[in-house]
Image (cartoon, rainbow, N blue to C red):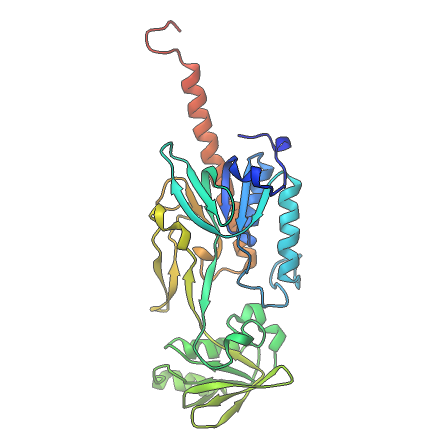
Length: 338
């Protein structure tokens, strides 16, 4: 363990050759929360973050008690500063490789930087959204193309909202968004035909169902105004709800044996995640995960909580290891008197 007073928040090249108690891969809410907890536990900790958080296009973070409405970039900047205040280090850059060394530690290789070594690893790399391929949709992601009513519902309350159906879960999406607006339309797009029961439920909530595949978005004055269907019809709306495919970001971790597993919702596969126990421990010794990389539906506040929980588990694991080594060192060697 390195005393926190010996740590710095610098990111100079010589620092990146150091040994750390823990390297955190990913500097979003989960990673920074974990790093803060570890730094306050007097652990030497380095966060390596490639930038580009999932919520970067959003104007604000919501449902985070005490931080409601905070811009995502500000939250992360303040989180980095808090980690540094307790002696943690943050390195901006992508991790391109992670491998186990012969002594059981981890060698982490940042792009364009010197490798660092860690006794434990916290993976908080998040996930990647793969939205439906409709012209103009990706450019408006997180602005008026939305996925989560708890993140964005209040901001589009009472507005005309269209739900782009891509799976059998679309009826449930539309019924959920109906909580925020009485003007919800379900665009069947590529989804299966709704069952008679679903159509009855949608009709009971005054949700219109429109046949036809979406071809593109209509935009005026940098505001979404509607969805253009393949037959030329335009369905007016100021917010479009989509369900993207969610994929855990695990590229640089392949050498550790961390394999993503499928995540289902309502019997339908919605993405991939890294499996872990409730404290974030994976099946790979010494590796913990936190945030969207393992919890696809988690929001910022739950990701931060998961990072703190995983960090506490990592610190406890290190304490146990250090205690075992101290006991072994205190015992007399074989053949020596006690």
